[in-house]
Length: 280
Image (cartoon, helix red, strand yellow):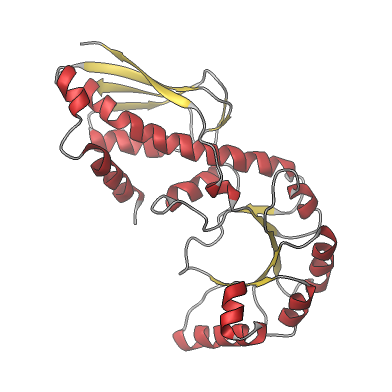
């Protein structure tokens, strides 16, 4: 689903037959101005989404960005200014904040982790551990924070995880069935497979080639060994409870990617608020 459609759904969810709070006490022709005030240091994300929220609520609102997505922000910064109908500004206020606070929190955490390994040839990936119907915004925020998107959904990459392996009857069976499936259906999809230990790495290396091997919950020592064994057979990805305290050590093991589910599913929204003034 497109971003504009999701925003339209969010507006419908919030407003339905009208903002009775604003309608009851604000004159219909009142004009006002408001600024988006930053109250916590971090990385800005979602300003273009907020712009679309205001324009869908009322396309006569003037939206004046002062910063752009991906910018470093500090307490006291003003991200944007809006001018127009006071009722419309109030209708859009909370939705715009909800998008921006959540997205900026994700971008900020992504940037923090990225800075810890910025000098190493390793990329940070998000996962599918996202909020239903909000994935596109969360993955956009990861990119705004300098991270990279893993697959978007179940349809754009094959990822053979532990349960797939167990249900398929083992690693060899899972890989062979996957290659046959791609051939029969003429799909051109990348194939990634999870390894839970060094023994499974050996089993994968004895099979047909895959594009990436995800090394899940490996110790530093085993991860280094696995990366050396895999060589140029496939890309390597470390995963499993990786935090800002451990990410550099994992990256130093030589993996190409580190996936961090907490980028999107364990995040604190960044503090900001819309400060409005009324002129009529």
